Length: 593
Image (cartoon, rainbow, N blue to C red):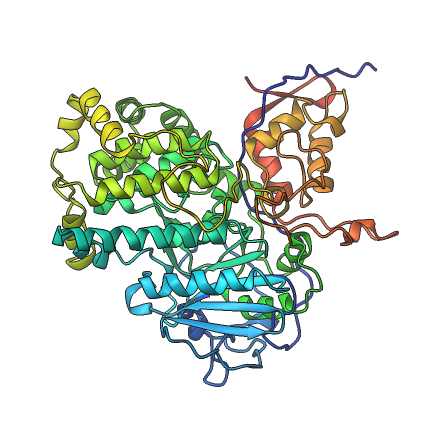
């Protein structure tokens, strides 16, 4: 029987991010909350204290109520809310002059807890300073892991920069107030860039509302954990602001392509729970009652290698989405195809016309969401995402800072009014923006030129740019950790099917052979261009120096022990193959044009 030889299409792979775990292991016994090796945990007190008893100020099991029922997850008897392992407080929080930030030292781990629940952990200048000072110091020690999380009421990881305070400063319209507003954003972007380029692995626990600057804090971390309480949205347009924090870099590299990034940015659509993992925003889904034991387990790590961290995290994950779940989730199936068709368009008029032509309930819902955003925000966002697609991370932060300067000095800005109506008065009615969307669409060239001239007069944001002097020159064009902690992208599967990966060989593959390739190779460091095994990262100027440990041994390297398959990878690949390939002679796959 002749086997089909595949013709290789030498097209460069796009850079994306996504999620990635392993089979659940036995539940962890009672243990101390101590991160003993290379790991920084970033979390907020809302969810922490909600699961704590009085004697465990950091983390402990507690009763929680699920807010996401779209995809059920299994629960372990040993992890019943309120009856799971209680984490013994081995240390009191370190005294802090900033009560809205709590810090815990646990051997070689550090935990930062955001504790401003009454304001959804909106970031004040004092909080941002604490983030900068502590993470910069921790990253220069032998700490193995860092964690950041949220606080007491369990509602929010972080809703971003304190928009009410920012609007007040801008509304004063004095040189001094504008300088303070710009200084707040300057410090915020500097902190977000620092977290994005740490040498030490950062674990961000998004156990609640995550948007705006909060998304910028967490989105570049190698490990981003979602729970049933997670709600993520790109919500800046509803108050007339813009996307900052380097989030445009992430959105232009989504696992299902930049149409999904444009959809999320233009609509402000909310993703909940495991949906954030399926979209690629979070890397793992962990039922919230397992978080305390997971952090205790991380404390037993003996390596900062994120492959080791990933294997531990995958012992605690909830049920992986099935292939049916992938077809039926909120952005899957026909809705996913609609997003790909409509948001592949380049301009706002083209996107809206494509949505109107769909004549579906989902398309109508998206149009309504888009119409709630400030029209100038929509034009600016499309330009940001287009530019970010070819830019490095640091350049995206510098671009954000240039836009922030223009926004703060914009006499026609409606940001203050947006904050008043949405955040203060919580008005359910759409804001009557001026100019309105119809006016902008009717004079699209004029308004696009105005946006380009006012907000993006400079197009070179390299290291020599005067915009936003960062703490370091570290930057990158793709996420070094994406093949370790993320799920495969559509493009990843395509280049395996079409033979652009050297390790695949010259012959066409069957469906099972493609699935087996990902089961064997995913969860390791792979070259971002051709998915070949690599050990050339991270580089000195990218951050992540502790991600890859030369002497770390994967269980797959142990004679007689089979490597554990990464959580969710098989189902994700099966779904992509169902959507994107056809079967030809003797079961071999052909990628659809």
